[in-house]
Amino acid sequence: MNDYRLVADAVAADIAAGRLRPGEQLPPQRIFARKAGIANSTASRVYQELNRRGLTVGEVGRGTFVRAADAPVAPVLSDPKDNSVDLELNYPVVPEQSALLAKDITALLRPDALGAAVRPVGAVGTPAARIAAAALASRGGWQPDPEQIVFAGNGRQMIAAALAALVPRGARLGVEEFSYPLVKAIADQLGIILVPLPVDEDGLLPDAVAAAHRSAPLRAVYLQPTLHNPLSFITSEPRRVALADVFADCGVYAVEDAVWAFLREDLPPFAALAPDTTVLVDSLSKRLVPGMTLGFAVAPRPLLTDIAVALRSGGWTPMRFALEAATAWTASGTVATIAQAKREDAMLRQATAQRELANFAVRGNPASYYCWWELPRPWRADTFVTAAARQGIAVTPAAAFTVGTTRAPNAVRLALASPRLDALSRALRTLADIARATPDTLVAE
Image 1 (spheres, rainbow, N blue to C red):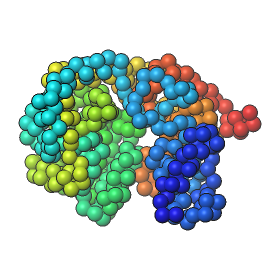
Image 2: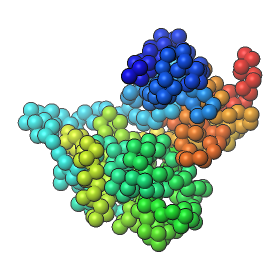
Image 3: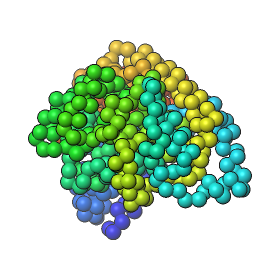
Image 4: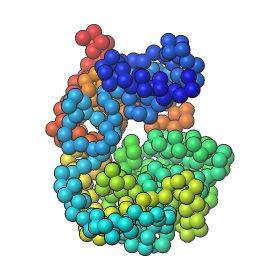
């Protein structure tokens, strides 16, 4: 079979038709390969493709299961018709944002303006866009220089370009031991070796960074100091200072992911402490609207050319229309209005989660759209994910966030942003009921 995607399409059709139901376990890959008449390597690619499409979940060595529903391609304000609830993907949407966004881009739809807005643009964007992005990145009294800003099509591309510019193929990148899953995929594509680094409630451990660097040099460290995904912690000020000192002593660059930092606009970024060695990456997807993607970075001047080259060679430069729209939304105050509404929404949803799961070991920051749930015994993450899927609720196992050989705890991450608030409350109550039972009890039922 030359195209593994044809086999994946057939499995997807079975899922869509209900022949494979939510929570149902797929056979091991070698058995699937034998039944389908394909090579084991092709079966592996089929399973990877199903996971990429959001149709399956699972952990290596434990099994692959059909997800509760197809991953949505856009945020919704009401529940899907099949009553499934997605607590895997985080798409913050507030009711007033569509009207605000539409109002500000009306001028761009005039024929003359639209003609200009769809012309090609490079990684450095436009002067107006750089000023707008500098305003968006400013927090806690810190303001970047607009001339140190470059743009990408989205935040993931911006991370990839920063890593490509900083870490050569075969070199080592430090990451928090639980980290943004797509960084693992980016590192794999770029041939970068990931080095998991331990964290505590105050953030990344400076001594661990120094020890890892002594064993074999780190070229950079990717970190999320403000509202970490998935653990929601905020790196304390003393810890940030200590990390800045360690990075300086070791000659290590930092790639700061600030995609959720807009929820705490009072906190300056890590880049404020180490501006000469930190690439701060941000985007509009969470702050504003996921359908209009735009990534940007504030980078030290000596790195700007290398990052721009990586953006061009990767095909990751931005769309000019997105730049023009973001500039208009920033200038009008729309971005600030929507961001404030999402700050209030996040606090409400986090409070809801803490209330509904009050008797469990749930970690979450009051400003965060995430919860990290250490499951009670005898639950394992994989069996809990399956039990939740059978109730039409999709959650993410801890294994999705682990790096290297780090052992995944029996925990799940709950993304709180996408469902309607009343649907979120019901889903959390259902999850609590599942956790109070046992896997054997639910199987018996």
